[in-house]
Structures are given as structure tokens and as C-alpha cells.
Amino acid sequence: MRIRVMLAATSLLLVALFVTSARDAEKANTENYIKQSESEWAAAASKGDTSTVKRILADDFLGIAPDGSYYDKAKEIADTMNDHGNTISNHVNTVKVRFFGETAVAQGSETWEQRKLQVKRGTYVWTDTWVRRKDMWQIVAAEDLLLPESVNK
Image 1 (cartoon, helix red, strand yellow):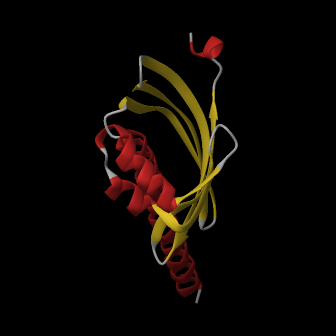
Image 2: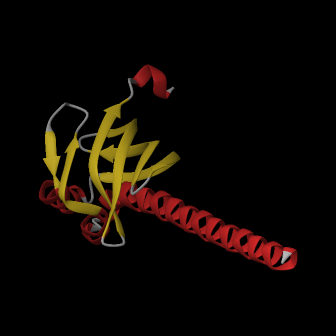
């Protein structure tokens, strides 16, 4: 009888360890996906890459630009197409991802360089809210802040 109880307890422990390992692996894969997608979104304007924007922004996405204005997915797609050629480079510096069930909050910074009449450089810090829907992670909300030039130096 003791052997059966010990075998059952050992089996339950092994199943629990397997499930925990699978969850940890899925979380790590999702974190990598979010970080990679954030980098791709940052680079999208310099490439005119609307496919990235279409993939990672939810249809009900709403963002807040550094000037306080709101923008949706359609506007971000249009801006990505229209900005191609004006943005020389844009790359992510850091990304920190935290999970809350089927929601993740990504916070980070990116450095950009634009050419309008002259070359201008800057740094954004941002917060993006990701939600898992139908086995797909997408951004539903974003807020971008432009750091003052004195912080960029």
C-alpha cells in the first residue's frame, strides 16, 4: 500500500514539474516574441514595413503619441508607409516584459534618427500593452514619451 501511495505521489510530482517546465518555456518564447516584435515595429518606419504593424497591432489598438494625440492601427499603418524615407533609423535599446495572465506589459526605449529639413535624433520611452487572443499576442494600447534633448546627451 505504501509503495502505491509513493508511486502516485511521485507521478503527481513529475506531472507538476512537466507542466511547470512547459509553462516556463512558453513564457520565455512569448517574451522573446514580444521583444523581437517591438524591435521590428521600431524598425518598420525606416523600411516602410506595414506588414509588421498589421501583424502586431490589434484591430482595436489605440496609442497615445508624445504630443498627446491618439492614433489607431489604420493611422499607424498609413504613417509607416508615408514616413518611409524620412526615418533614417529607429532601433530598440531596452525592453522589459512583465506578464499578468493573458496580458503582458512591455516597457522600453528606442533611439531614432529622422531627416526632414535636417537630421534630427531622439529617444522615446514607451509602454505597450499586449493581450493574447485566439493564441495570438498583439498590442492593444501604447503610450510613447519623447525624452528631452538634455536627457539624450
